[in-house]
Image (tube, rainbow, N blue to C red):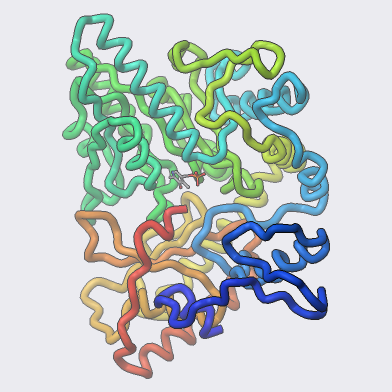
Length: 470
Ligand SMILES: *Cc1c(COP(=O)(O)O)cnc(C)c1O
């Protein structure tokens, strides 16, 4: 158990042998080693190749104990069977797999309907490898729309900017970098813990391609106030004629809010919202590799971003960064839609939320903690040490101690203006039961006791920023 912890926090002292060690049970004699990072001249038998990899991945962490990730780690056996039947389907091959393509279209319309698009049947949207690709496409559409509108009036089209909070997921930093848009980060502070109307109005100008509130901030799980931001931008438009669209990053919340907070105004009910992304593989309850982006109406995507390719047969319009991509996850999304319906999604997410709220309620009695995300939006709990509390240990030590029990719970600094505050976060996924939460809370209490008893433990490397950005 200790080994698990050490593996991640310090450089390795010993080097591995050049060849993979092969258990003599599987094969008595290999004339040649099995190099780790070079092709062997001849191949292994299928059983041995399977066994070698099977044994190595057994040393990965236990996904059920990973409270850092948002990504689904369990589906029903029927979904597994469907997955195995569909692994060969290539999403781009819409001519060869017209039913898979049709099912993708149905999922887009279901999401458009869930997010209150004015006319779900004529909207436009696509599946992607995850919210990251979805955000890139949505950001690109914003940039092109802005450029087209500027060109039409003879205004310069250089130096576009995008307005986000400093607590954005890393994908928006990537978007800005890769597609050469100036990122304007509105700092989150104790007074303004999320992006809000004041922050947005102070940052936008005539070169702003869009504003991106997050439904379920990665750091705390809290929803940013989309309706308030939309209202401020509506007023700005009336006052100045500046017409700045909103894209909602609903990576987590896009699959949660429609079920747990159906009255919350955050989606296409707000005319200013032009596009929304969500991760099928987070609260969409599908294995990794799936995201979605939907636009309010087809005209919100500039025609020049859509390619028509003839070389797969047919003449298929495509809007994607990737060409080939697995189609199986799309079928799994359709499976969850058919399987759960609105009631099922509500029941599953409500149950995760109850577990999150239970953890949030208990935390204060277990140690000097202040809860800063209590699971009321997405089922994520975030906490910090109570301000002013002087302890010989901090949350990095606690994260380290929890590892010895197998739990992966990240501790990380808040973004820039609040980087002196370290928070710890637990993502409650549907497969994390109330019983597991009870075990977790017991282990957490024990870790706190150990830290209190032992005085100053050795310093621990803080979790690097990138590693929790799921
Ligand atoms: C997870 C996440 C992303 C990136 O999504 P992937 O599906 O992992 O590519 C983007 N934005 C937010 C708010 C997220 O939580």
